[in-house]
Structures are given as C-alpha cells and as structure tokens.
Length: 495
Image (cartoon, rainbow, N blue to C red; front, side):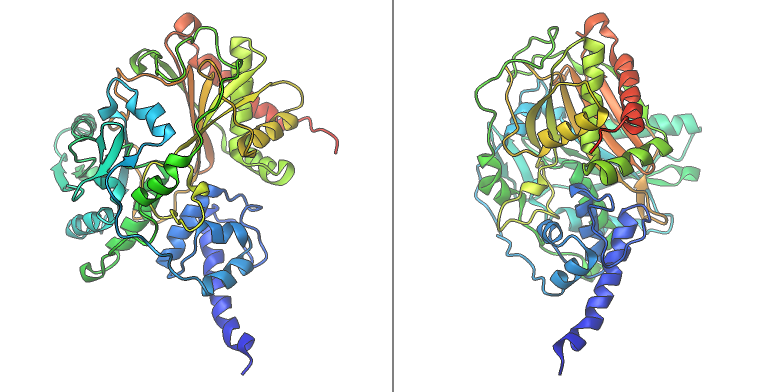
C-alpha cells in the first residue's frame, strides 16, 4: 500500500483544522495550506492562542513546532507525528526569582499589591455549577498558583486554596451595581497574599439584567498577560466537558521546573553605559525610587481602526517587522520630542515564552515569564529607518545594554486580542479593581502598555508625577499618536 495515499486524507483534515484556527486568531483572515503564519500577521503571543484553540480540536503542537514549520502544510505534517512532551511531576522548594520579578515586584513598598485581574462576561446558558467545578480543575494543575514568596525565593504550597465566591449584585440602580462591582473586586484583590496565600481569588457576579461576570484576580508572581489567554481557553474547554472528563495534570513544563532550569540563568544587565535617561528622574536603577502611582498622570490613545490596520499591514508587508517595533519607534519619538532628548533608552518588557530552552515546553504553562532588556534609540530621520532600528534592537541577542540611570520608558506590547463571536468568556466593560496600589512606585519615568484589541491599537501612557509641570501624560499621548500617523504615512526609503 502507498503510505502517502494512506496518510494524505488525515493530513488534509489537519490542514483544514489548522487553517480554521489560524483564521479565527487572525481576525478572519483567509488561510490556505501554503500561507505563512507570520506573513499573515501572527506573532509569538498569537502562537499561544492558536495552540489553545488547536488543542480544543484535538491537535497538539508547541511554539517551536510552529516557528520551525511556519505554513499550514508544513505544520500539519509535524502535528500528525507530535507526541506530548515529558513533564516533570514536581520540583523542590526554593525556586529563584527572575530579574524581572525582582525589579518590578519585590522592590515595591507594597509587594503584596502587585496583581493582575480580568473581568469576563459569562455566556448566558452556562450553568453556574459547571463553572464552579471547572475552575478548580483548570487552576489546580498549574503550579504557579501554589507559589508563595519566601524571602528572596519562591516555594510551593500544598494547594492553591481557591474557592469561587458567588455574589448577588443584581439589586439597585445601574450605578449602584457598578459601585458594587468595584467594591467587591477591590475586596477580592486586596485579599491576595503572596506569602501565606491564596494568590488567586475569583467570584461569579450576578448583575441582574446586565448578565453575569466572572472576576479572577491573581498575584503577578502567579500570572502574566499570556497566562490569562491560556486559562480562558482551558476554562471554556473544561466547561464544555462532563465533570468526569475534567483535565488532569497540565501537559506542559511546570513553572517551577522552568524557573529552576531557565529563569534563574537569564542574563542580568551588565556593566552600566550612560545615556538615554531623563534628567528629572535621577533615582537609582535598582531601588525603584520613583514617584508613587497616586501622583502619576495617565492618558489613553485608541488608534482608529483604519490606522491600526494600516500599521499592521505596513509592519508585516513592507517592513518585515512586528507591531512591537512600531510601538517602540513611536514611543521613543514622543519621549524625544516632549523631553528634548536625542537619545532614548527603554526597558522592554517581553512575555518571555519564546525563550523556553531546549526540552522545555511552556506554551500552556501559567506564571510570570516576563523578560526585561534595555535598548537605546536615536529618533529622527525616515520613519521606516527608525522602525527597523527598533526591530533590530528588540531582536538582536547582543543588543541589550544597561544604563546608569533608569531608562526613560518601560514599553510593554501585549500583542493582539481578538473577540470571537459566541465566545463563552469575553471581556466585560465594567470598571473593576485597580491592579496597582496607589502607594506603589512607577518603575520608570514613563510606562507604556499597548495592545491591539479587536480592530484598535490601544495604548496607555503613564507619566511620573515628578515630571516637569507634573502633567506630561497627555502631551506624550498626543506626540505618540502623531508619531503613529507619521509612521503610517511615510515617506519610505528607497530600496
């Protein structure tokens, strides 16, 4: 028998499933067997979404599989032969903190209140008992929710200690319900304890005519932005299965194993190099001596859909870069313009999951994998050149530097988030608990967090209260928005 004849129909079916998954993650873009994931606008964070959706369809592959096999046809051939990676059952206590965790968490005056949270609309016909059973089954296999802070290291507790509260907030006016959501989510947020536990809390909120909301909050030591994507996909899949088929042990490398094997060995910034900071922000690089968040000013830029689409297409097709390079180029342009500096140093906060190491698969592992590196750019000249310089700085393995002063900005591009029709858990619009304690410090004079949410690039710029005039966030936001328009408009350099 011709083996190719025997295998091809199965491969065709896998190609169809992969194409459908990629199309869903990439906002409905048509996908064929020869299409390249990254040419279509995919990035390293979207890989995780494709893995989560593919797993729901019975397909299993790792980020490295997709990086090495970038078309549907190539990956389909790899998926047919894929086997589950070996997972170590447990790790010893004494997990080291990464450099990013030390810098962004433990040096704060209130490290207990360095948290992350989500508020999701819940599908109307989802049974509350099913959700209450599925949540612990999804959380328990992830050892990051058992992490406890023990001095300068982490240890593993016996269990997560998670229980789902059910709160009836259906009474009163719309305004009173909104106030109740903020009050209850803040209470849950403030009850997290990274030392004694729990590090994750949750509640199902009944808002009456507005429907139900699921609020989940966790200490940052237990999650990063990619962790919520993983959990949302796993929770939706678990809620569709009978209780007897709830997931067991997690199928990727536990966080503790990664941290002991990889996280502690990541390079710490080396000898200092002067330049790129701001004169009004003289605090030391390692002591987080910035102004408290309560004194900061914040501005939000919601880039129009047509401009966002132009920037995404420009980065992918014309420049061969990612949207993270566009954001970095626009931020450095804005900082240079507003503060009158020729050289801008930025700390880049990256999700870190693309540096797992050989024999380590963390595509469906929750935890805080953030990687920090410092880059310096000199804005000016053609926009195309600056974006390409930003891309080179982001991806050059030897391009990171350290500075004597705190870099001008922390830049964190969170990737693309797609709202899918009929999604079991979708982003809610209500205001809920703030992740930041008002007395905790900004770690940088300017902090920038950006993501493509649906059709829009949404960017939040926060400026230290010690800035000249104390009110520079809106000025920075205006300069940043103008920089994005300039990048989209050109002019282009001749090849």
